[in-house]
Structure formats: C-alpha cells, structure tokens
Amino acid sequence: MQLNDKWQGLCWPMMDFLRCVTAALIYFVISITAVAKYSDGAYKAAGVFGFFATIVFAIDFYLIFNNVAKFLKQGDTTEENTAHRAEAGLWGHGDL
Image (cartoon, rainbow, N blue to C red):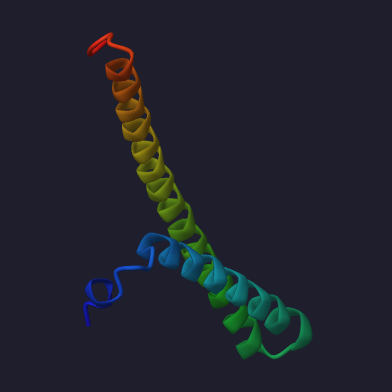
C-alpha cells in the first residue's frame, strides 16, 4: 500500500517501535491471564505461545530501538559537525 509515501509526516520507525511495545505488552498480559485464571490445557498452551510471542516482540523492540538510536546519533553528529563548521566560518577560522 506504500503508506510511507502517502503519509510522509509520520515517523515510521517510531510507529514500528510503538507497535512492538504495544504488542509485547498485550501478549504478556493475555498470557498471564490465560495461565493464571484457567486450568484447562488449551489455555496453558495458549499462555506458553503467548509468552513466546512476547519474547519475539521484545527482541524486535530491542532491534528497532538500537536502529532508531543509531539513526538519531548519526543525526546529532552531522548537526554538530555542521554547527561547528558554521561557527568556525563565522569567526574566520576556516575549516578546522
């Protein structure tokens, strides 16, 4: 559907990050409820699969967080270098 091209004002990595966090929390709560409240074997199996899904979403959360953090660090360093160069040019020191 190429929604990223249609809605360019959204920060898509942050949206993916929030999706992972929300999914991990929902699966975790539902898994705890299924295991604690019901004693049927099917509910226990559903709880185990829910915990597995929680782990998968948590890993995805961690990987996305690292990618977003690296991206933000790159943006900070380029802004600092640009600001430093502009400041050096402003004071007549040239490129340092």
